[in-house]
Image 1 (cartoon, rainbow, N blue to C red):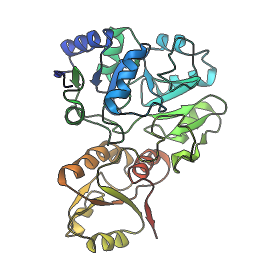
Image 2 (cartoon, helix red, strand yellow):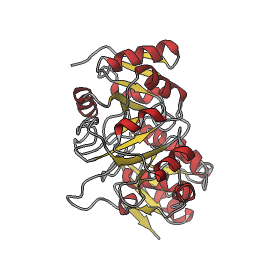
Image 3 (cartoon, helix red, strand yellow):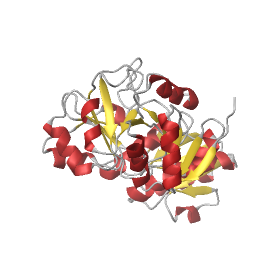
Image 4 (tube, rainbow, N blue to C red):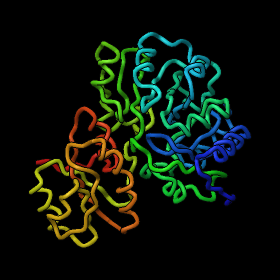
Length: 339
């Protein structure tokens, strides 16, 4: 059943309207610095269930809870250890999510039945203003249909969610463009999802090693449960089959040139001039900040172009690029051509 959806700017009028919808148990698509989030009261079970229903999101995929200041964190978790405070002081507000054992205040539907909760404080002023006016911690996975490329503009939210939710806030283009880094502090510090904060930055702030989960660059094993958003096998994906090409530019261009007319390339800026095949770009080579901002918009554009197969140039694997590499692996369902 379709509902009326309003599109408002992320100004005082829009922020107040969003807060009213959230306080009534409704859903709002709102901007953050990472991607647009589909927001609901994280403590209201029926509102959280509506997130899963609207997105078509699997119930075993936990949600991230967003706060506007540190005072909102303490009631959500059993305790805040010193290592967690070190990370919060270094990176909040910002694109970092911290997982700790949850308190009884957080319903199991928000955490997919797990005994821990993922929390972050976004740096987008509009998002924090909505949370502050609402006075509630807000669950907000990406504001898209589950599995498709995440939304980095209000237009993307309109494409996926118009008629499904009451309000979309337009806060412009997201400055980071990929979802937050997720680190678990339940046990040894473990990176579960890479993002705008690199493993090296985490280790520097913590003063201790951070283990990188195997699921960052490998699919989950059969029956293995996702402990963080973004760990599903195929995720962030266009409708086209996508193949990641981890090889030389010459090898990539040869593959592309030998392909049929419904095949497109995803290349670094400037490389589109080297082939007669149609291509989209996602930033300069070795510039992961640009790649992160442009990746999801490019993946969505392939659907508009009617692409059936996409050969994608492989980004770097480490540091700040790990988040982009992780998203592309999952968009390609781990189909990689090497050598």
